[in-house]
Image (cartoon, rainbow, N blue to C red; front, side):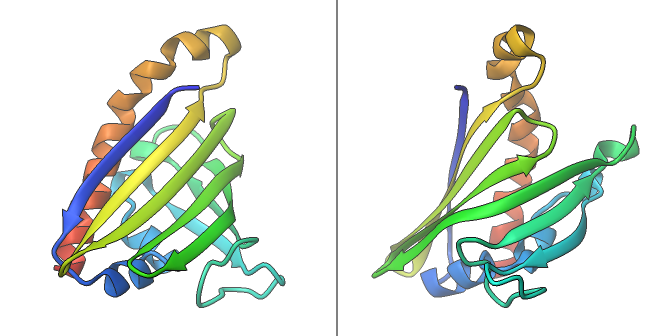
Length: 159
Protein backbone atom coordinates (compact mmCIF):
# COMPACT_ATOMS: atom_id res chain seq x y z
CA UNK A 1 0.00 0.00 0.00
CA UNK A 2 1.44 3.44 -0.90
CA UNK A 3 2.29 5.87 1.90
CA UNK A 4 2.85 9.59 2.28
CA UNK A 5 4.69 11.25 5.18
CA UNK A 6 5.37 14.88 6.04
CA UNK A 7 7.03 16.25 9.18
CA UNK A 8 7.74 19.77 10.38
CA UNK A 9 8.81 21.66 13.46
CA UNK A 10 6.38 24.08 15.07
CA UNK A 11 7.86 26.67 17.41
CA UNK A 12 5.11 26.25 19.99
CA UNK A 13 4.69 24.17 23.14
CA UNK A 14 3.66 20.54 22.68
CA UNK A 15 0.48 21.01 24.75
CA UNK A 16 -0.73 23.87 22.53
CA UNK A 17 -0.12 21.94 19.32
CA UNK A 18 -1.76 18.76 20.67
CA UNK A 19 -4.81 20.66 21.96
CA UNK A 20 -5.22 22.44 18.62
CA UNK A 21 -5.40 19.10 16.78
CA UNK A 22 -7.83 17.54 19.25
CA UNK A 23 -11.14 18.70 17.83
CA UNK A 24 -12.90 19.44 14.56
CA UNK A 25 -11.96 23.13 14.65
CA UNK A 26 -8.34 22.16 13.98
CA UNK A 27 -9.45 20.12 10.97
CA UNK A 28 -11.39 23.06 9.55
CA UNK A 29 -8.55 25.54 10.18
CA UNK A 30 -6.00 23.26 8.49
CA UNK A 31 -7.98 22.39 5.36
CA UNK A 32 -7.22 24.63 2.37
CA UNK A 33 -10.14 26.68 1.08
CA UNK A 34 -9.83 25.07 -2.35
CA UNK A 35 -11.03 21.78 -0.79
CA UNK A 36 -14.40 23.42 0.05
CA UNK A 37 -14.71 21.37 3.24
CA UNK A 38 -18.05 21.18 5.03
CA UNK A 39 -18.39 19.44 8.39
CA UNK A 40 -21.84 17.89 8.53
CA UNK A 41 -21.49 16.34 11.98
CA UNK A 42 -19.02 15.31 14.64
CA UNK A 43 -19.98 12.77 17.29
CA UNK A 44 -18.08 11.50 20.27
CA UNK A 45 -17.76 7.78 21.01
CA UNK A 46 -20.94 7.95 23.11
CA UNK A 47 -22.87 9.71 20.32
CA UNK A 48 -22.50 13.16 21.91
CA UNK A 49 -22.67 15.84 19.19
CA UNK A 50 -19.73 18.23 18.76
CA UNK A 51 -17.46 16.79 21.48
CA UNK A 52 -14.72 18.99 22.96
CA UNK A 53 -12.12 16.32 22.11
CA UNK A 54 -12.23 13.76 19.33
CA UNK A 55 -11.50 10.64 21.36
CA UNK A 56 -11.14 7.13 19.93
CA UNK A 57 -14.55 6.13 18.63
CA UNK A 58 -15.47 9.66 17.48
CA UNK A 59 -16.84 10.05 13.96
CA UNK A 60 -16.63 13.14 11.74
CA UNK A 61 -18.91 13.30 8.70
CA UNK A 62 -17.81 15.84 6.13
CA UNK A 63 -17.75 16.48 2.43
CA UNK A 64 -15.29 18.10 0.05
CA UNK A 65 -15.54 19.54 -3.44
CA UNK A 66 -11.95 20.19 -4.55
CA UNK A 67 -11.63 23.38 -6.61
CA UNK A 68 -15.45 23.57 -6.76
CA UNK A 69 -15.45 20.97 -9.54
CA UNK A 70 -17.84 18.02 -9.72
CA UNK A 71 -20.23 16.79 -7.08
CA UNK A 72 -19.44 16.95 -3.35
CA UNK A 73 -17.58 13.87 -2.10
CA UNK A 74 -18.54 12.36 1.22
CA UNK A 75 -15.69 11.81 3.67
CA UNK A 76 -16.44 10.01 6.93
CA UNK A 77 -13.57 9.55 9.37
CA UNK A 78 -13.45 7.55 12.57
CA UNK A 79 -10.83 8.18 15.22
CA UNK A 80 -9.59 4.66 15.92
CA UNK A 81 -6.78 5.43 18.36
CA UNK A 82 -5.67 8.33 20.52
CA UNK A 83 -2.96 8.41 23.16
CA UNK A 84 -0.89 10.98 25.00
CA UNK A 85 2.11 10.35 27.22
CA UNK A 86 4.90 12.56 28.53
CA UNK A 87 5.99 14.69 25.57
CA UNK A 88 4.39 12.66 22.80
CA UNK A 89 0.93 11.94 21.45
CA UNK A 90 -0.83 10.58 18.44
CA UNK A 91 -4.22 9.91 16.99
CA UNK A 92 -5.25 7.82 14.03
CA UNK A 93 -8.26 8.25 11.80
CA UNK A 94 -9.54 5.95 9.11
CA UNK A 95 -11.82 6.92 6.26
CA UNK A 96 -14.92 4.73 6.48
CA UNK A 97 -16.65 6.39 3.52
CA UNK A 98 -15.05 8.52 0.85
CA UNK A 99 -13.07 8.73 -2.37
CA UNK A 100 -10.26 6.29 -1.44
CA UNK A 101 -10.53 2.53 -1.19
CA UNK A 102 -8.44 2.85 1.98
CA UNK A 103 -7.13 5.79 4.02
CA UNK A 104 -5.35 5.49 7.37
CA UNK A 105 -3.94 8.79 8.69
CA UNK A 106 -1.70 8.83 11.77
CA UNK A 107 -1.00 12.25 13.30
CA UNK A 108 2.01 12.20 15.67
CA UNK A 109 3.36 14.96 17.93
CA UNK A 110 6.67 15.06 19.83
CA UNK A 111 7.90 17.69 22.25
CA UNK A 112 11.41 18.86 21.42
CA UNK A 113 12.42 21.54 23.92
CA UNK A 114 10.07 24.49 23.39
CA UNK A 115 9.07 23.21 19.94
CA UNK A 116 6.89 20.40 18.64
CA UNK A 117 7.55 17.97 15.82
CA UNK A 118 4.36 17.31 13.85
CA UNK A 119 4.23 14.25 11.61
CA UNK A 120 1.48 13.11 9.25
CA UNK A 121 1.68 9.57 7.91
CA UNK A 122 -0.95 8.35 5.45
CA UNK A 123 -1.43 4.83 4.11
CA UNK A 124 -3.85 4.80 1.19
CA UNK A 125 -5.28 2.89 -1.74
CA UNK A 126 -6.80 4.63 -4.72
CA UNK A 127 -9.99 3.31 -6.32
CA UNK A 128 -10.07 1.66 -9.77
CA UNK A 129 -8.38 -1.64 -8.86
CA UNK A 130 -5.18 -2.32 -10.79
CA UNK A 131 -5.19 1.13 -12.40
CA UNK A 132 -5.46 2.75 -8.95
CA UNK A 133 -2.62 0.52 -7.72
CA UNK A 134 -0.44 1.65 -10.62
CA UNK A 135 -1.25 5.33 -10.02
CA UNK A 136 -0.99 5.13 -6.20
CA UNK A 137 2.60 6.36 -5.92
CA UNK A 138 1.72 9.38 -8.08
CA UNK A 139 -0.95 10.55 -5.62
CA UNK A 140 1.81 12.42 -3.79
CA UNK A 141 1.33 15.12 -6.44
CA UNK A 142 -2.07 15.83 -4.89
CA UNK A 143 -1.10 15.20 -1.27
CA UNK A 144 1.95 17.45 -1.22
CA UNK A 145 0.14 20.82 -1.62
CA UNK A 146 -2.52 19.79 0.90
CA UNK A 147 -0.08 18.71 3.62
CA UNK A 148 2.34 21.55 2.90
CA UNK A 149 -0.60 23.90 3.52
CA UNK A 150 -1.59 22.06 6.74
CA UNK A 151 1.91 22.29 8.20
CA UNK A 152 2.43 25.91 7.13
CA UNK A 153 -0.98 26.86 8.59
CA UNK A 154 -0.19 25.08 11.87
CA UNK A 155 2.97 27.16 12.20
CA UNK A 156 1.14 30.35 11.23
CA UNK A 157 -1.63 29.82 13.80
CA UNK A 158 0.47 28.52 16.70
CA UNK A 159 3.88 30.17 16.52
